[in-house]
Image (tube, rainbow, N blue to C red; front, side, top):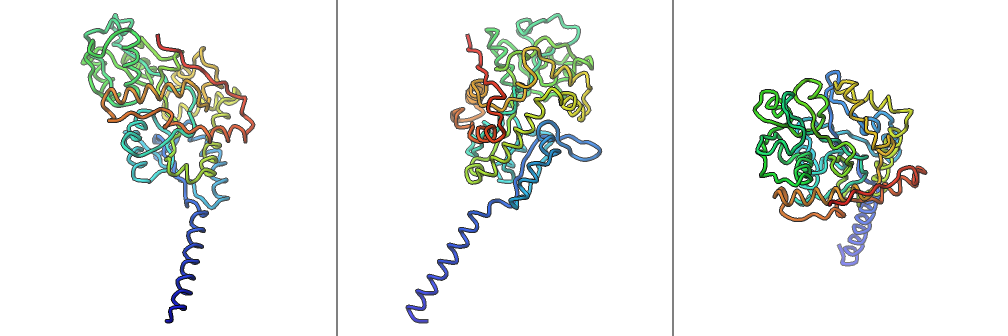
Length: 354
């Protein structure tokens, strides 16, 4: 082939590669994969909460189909944090609805994710003692054994409770146990107290007596949000906005008083008693609609500052992570505007520590 022919061939090859790259750039991903906690229902893994509403409504799946993108759910049971972190790290998922502390640990390890939609006002934490105990506050437990699962999101709540009472972790014997063995240890007297989620179920079963809860304390709750892999959200802004919009549509639906009973019924699907679910949601200090707020307000920002600081102090991470790096509010802002909900929820301010 002549020199001119080689140049022409090279030019045609360059044009073909340019066209291929241009097509690939606009093609987008073939699927969006969302991980969330799950439970077994009728022999199959099932979703609950806001992800369940998104799944059942079908709006997100339909909108993605219009763009040639599939919606794939990644249900997780067991050690949710570790499983979802591994899935993010290996690129098997693009979004996940899960807790605050595992997310901070993941980011400190170099896998960058961000909160795409804050999930309301958090989950309450509980301190229980044996039914026959005379303790009425954590001050009465100095020198005693408290079961807490180290490294799980609710450990921060216990340390906050200790700090709020002008005490130190060294004032207690903190025993590292997951919830089920911790509950068994409390029932048999192997520990004197238990710090957990979902304390009402344990109290109803006679395992323990609740002496403290985070109700009425938005800055002391555990949080779980919708997180997105940063490289994905940056490269696929329009698709990420669709996911955020679907989440906010679901949170807005849950925020309606007319749907309260349906929300409670959904809470019983994993086998939780109706009376327990109602007590979980019974909080005079928190308006029903505010429970589902997706706003990136002061409560959210301060919470992630606390989580990052806690993870560093406990040597769960080796470097500081700024809370602002973990939060990406632009998708919520766009979704609220598109849905006409810009004034529906009110931002809250976290109480200043004394």
